Image (cartoon, rainbow, N blue to C red; front, side, top):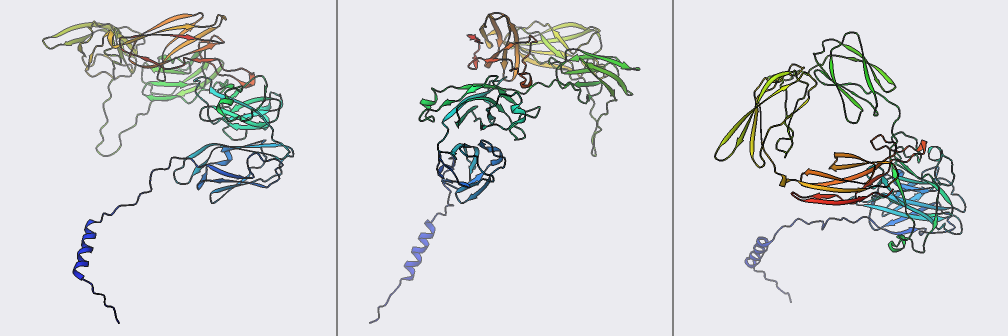
Length: 552
């Protein structure tokens, strides 16, 4: 008996059409983004192995990884003369040694940002692996922090090296006995080391040779040897780690003692700048032959000299410049102005660009700044317009410019707080020695009131040790005020715009008024810096009072 199957084509067609009409095509997604760093799930041999006699180590991960510069990001203590070979095999890493290991020795391998996951590049910040070729692991350790000596910010990615000797040349010529790397918070730990005293150094090792042998490498050191201490049973636990000794090292780049004059700069007609490599105390210039007169300006850090010529240079002028003990002969050539290029380009007519940088600030005279020294002016007029809803008052002030070096001029005009003003000076009033003159000058501003500002009252308490200290008020990266303190003192900082500020103090050991870095070759630490423990928030029409205790 044959069983017949009868299909209703109409019904099937309707069903298919219905399904197609209701279907929604959705692009498959990869799920949430992976923000997790790879994890080590197993090592062969296992971490802490003794009587190690293998030729390689194998590290297993929970996902596929990539290697991030193992030459720099893997530290092995004691250091090996030949770098191991690193090979990825699936989700594992094989490390093969290329030289015999020392007998009865504990080896530590520190991996810092070396492992990244394959897809998102999430990095495993730190992994430590240790083994011993002897019968036991060394169980002593040293830990600490590295801070930037000037900013007191954490110093990360420093190689921290321990030496068993005591010679001054150790970081210059010798390989360390133990090495690790500081983390992002500046902390470091050297585990599984032998008992004893060590010299300790931290180096920003530019050429990756574990030596302090380049002039621009940062270094931190302690003068005295430090003793390793026996690790507690579980030294990785935070509660136990907090009970262990903590060293603090301050990093710096040694000041260069060799003076050098860089190539002079000629940014505009009549302006010449002479940048020096390091700060100078005295500067002089001797002309060779006939040369033009000039105005001279030395910057506050005493490392750059700027000349403004009184007449345009038409031929080469020669000078002998002397900064302290160094002398250089320089040949100044006339300024070569760039010509406009391209079809239809028209050369712009240059003008003397006069600015009013502090317009509207409360109780501060209006400042007028010139980009080039100006010729004397017997008299010029300034129109001050006050703008109100029902009136428009005008006051005319008369000033003059004396025959002297003038790049900035104070205009003591009388204004009322919380009002709008306009200042106008006609064109062609000021003529720079470079031949340029001004367009009509007009600036509009609204004056602030005392209620728009805040005040900081800082009580500085310094040691009675006969030393000088320098207190600095910072706004972002700019110095607003510096004061020399020889005893405890209260300083009031007025008319501060509402914002966040910070305060620092350093011990001016040599009395030169500036912070000086250290010098390892002279066994000199950087001048000690103290930072107020938090940023200070200034509010409008509010006095904030703080006490800064400096404990040297």
